[in-house]
Image (cartoon, rainbow, N blue to C red; front, side):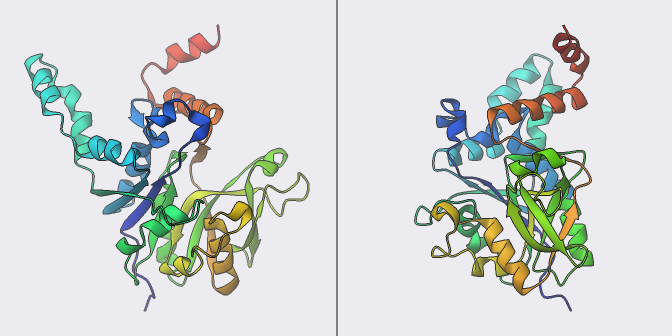
Length: 290
């Protein structure tokens, strides 16, 4: 008998103020920046849909909440009617796809919690039952070519004893100092995550990023008085503590993880998406090669 039910809910976080993206971030949430003709957040939601996630909780800033609510719920019927009148009704189909997503709930991060990437997850605690596992996703991490969420859910079917399951991606040994690097024990179980180790000192070349399958046990380690580096509440700290008490499994992505956390990497992720998916990709290649 399993301790926790399989995940049917995902928490997606975009509750920071993205200061590296100012001035645009003062008006537009980082997760609403485009990748192709979709916002980053939609790509993450689509990843959840591919894993049969039935309820998605987006944790946003107070300013971002109405923007997300409008994007995922506003049918813009005036645009639909105009497109029909112009004989271009097919252009509305991409809007209909957004409106047909599973239940999406938008909440704001609890302002009483300390700063840190664990606080948005804690803010959604009331929506997670005590007997269910769930998926937690940082929206500035995108994955091309697969659904990491489905990979996590499939792994949970094999490891129903898991306290948590996290994703990893192999990186070049020369860049391990940029990431949290996974140290393994007993083959595929997490020992700990070494934050930005020096080149040559890393326990592996397997980088951790924002794709986690968690159980409610994580909330025992994400309390306001459990802050870590820079007095912030860190999800990785909680997961490492869980690994000391139970089994936290590590699975490798079947796709390619890209961060959009800063303008340079966002541009590179956007460019790759265009080159891989858009019908004007050859024009872009030709322009870049000039």
